[in-house]
Length: 486
Ligand code: GLN
Image (tube, rainbow, N blue to C red; front, side):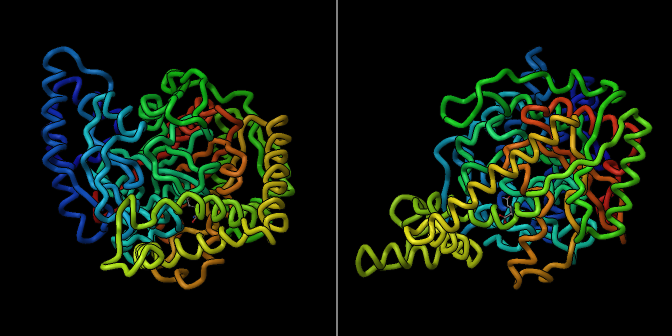
C-alpha cells in the first residue's frame, strides 16, 4: 500500500470495501511514525504491538460482520488522556513514569467505536504552552518547516496529522490548544462546547476551561469521530446531558441564508497583513456559498488574554496540588522529611512554565489579592460571555483568524512569556465563554499554513462542521501535504 495520505472517511470506506485490512493500514502508519519520529518528535509513546493486536481484532470483527463505521481506523491520543496500562505523561517529568489504571471516557468511547490506538502524542507540559516547547520530552517540529514550532499545547497531535503519521488525533483546548496548533500545521481542529465531551480521565489543567476535541484532516473526519467521544458521562459533573446529534447528517446542508459575524476587534491590530488577506479570501468563498457577513463588536474581547492568565493559573494551582510526590508520579530521592519530600518532588518534577503558572495562581487566589485579581477576572469573563451572546443574537457563526501569525521559529518566543501568551488572543474568548470553535486551513504565507477560525453558539457543532465542510468542498488547503511527508 502506498503512503496513507487519506482522510478517515476514505480509510473507513477502503476498510469496508476490503481494499486493505486494518492490520495493513496500521502497519503502514507505524512505519511512517517510525521514519518521522527522529525529525518531528510528535510521539511520546508508540504502542505498536497493542495497535497491531487491536487492528487484528478489528479485522476479525469485520469478518464476523460486526464492523461499525470506524472499525479498524487508526488514531492517536494526546498524552493528556489516561490510557489503561499505557504511559500517560502529560508532557511532564512529574508523570514520566505514570501508567494509568483506567481509560479516559474519550479513549474508551473511541475504543468502543473500533478505532485502533497507535500511541500517545507529545504536548506542552500539562498543556501549558503555545509552541510545544515546554514538553519534558523535547519540542515537536512543524512538518512544514522543521525549524518552526507546531503550535501548542497539542503540537504532537497537529504535527502528526499534518505529516499524516496518523489520520486523526485527539487533543484538548483550554485557551486555544486545539485550534492554534491546527492552524500552524495546516490541519482541521475542533474544540466542542464546554461540557459536550467528558473530561473524565483527561488530566486537569484549568477545569472551567478544559475541553477535549479533535485534530483531523477534514471537517468531515471530525464529524465522524466527534459523536463517539461526546455525550453525558456520570463521571464528569460538568458533562452536559443533551442528546448527541449525528454530526455527519447535516454536513452537506446549504449555507444559503447563513449570517456570519466578523468580530471587529479581531481585525483591529496585531493581525499579520498576509494572514488577514487569506481570511478575506475565505470570506469570498463563504459569500459564494450563500452566506452574508455582518460586522459585530465584542468590546471586552481584548481583555481575554489577561482574564485567562488569572483564571487558568488559579485553577491550575489548585489542580496541580495533587502532584505532591506521595500519590502520583515523580518522587525526589531520599527526602529528609515530609516538607522536603513535597518541596523537592514538586521543585524537581515540574518545569519552569508550570511553576510560573502555579505561583501566579497561588498569588491571585491569596486572601489579600483574591478580590483584586481572581474576582475581577471572573467578572470580566462574564462580560466577555455577554459580548458573545449579543453577537449570536444577530449572527449564526463568527469568523476570523485563529492565530495572529503563521508558525514562528523554535526558540523565538520561549524567553518571553507575554509574547508567547499573545498567540492565543483570538482563541481564548471561546474558552472563557464555553463556546465551540474550529480552525480550518485557508492558505499559506511564506510556505506556512494559515488558519481560519469559526466560533459558534453553545452546542452548534453540527452547524459549524457543516459550514467547515462546505468550505472544504470548495477549497483544497486541507488536503495539501508538507513536501517532506507527501
Ligand atoms: N496556550 C495557552 C496556555 O498556555 C492555552 C493552552 C491550552 O489550551 N491548553 O495556557
